[in-house]
Image (cartoon, rainbow, N blue to C red; front, side, top):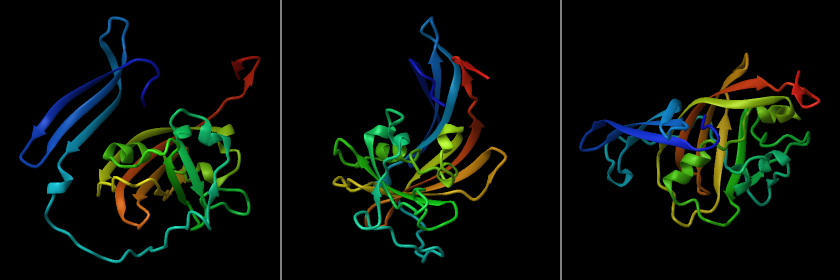
Length: 224
């Protein structure tokens, strides 16, 4: 996780070839001396030029094919306060199918979730860095499986991978984030995330492992 306050970002090249460059990135809390402390987040980034990629390509029909929900007729704006709870989430518009029981994104069933997102300042989703940000912004399958989840639990991403499949069109404003969890067990679960444009083309894929911890009640400002 990224700690609050000032941080130090250190990058080191691990491998460089004509097609790819592999970089190790460390994020650490800034020490009083100005030097970096113990790393809190470590990432391995493989850089390449999507426009020059070529090689094996196979086209096939997906075994699980459900059309995207219509943003205007099948979805409503998420009015849950949780979408305004952090500086990052409040930068987005959140539009999703809503079940009769009040849960969000349950149109497909199981632990599959769907949400349309755009930037509130009306800027476009036009860059791979936007996709990287949104890859960590899905409707959490476990959190949207029961009401009042965020009053009881906190979530921490233990690890995640992101693969960019296609650069978004520069005029893109809305993207669909589909998320699914295969198993929620013993305070830990997986999340598979797809980001698609309005035509249904996959822009990026990511996989997460999320840790769930119970929130402790407070009495007179102290934790129990």
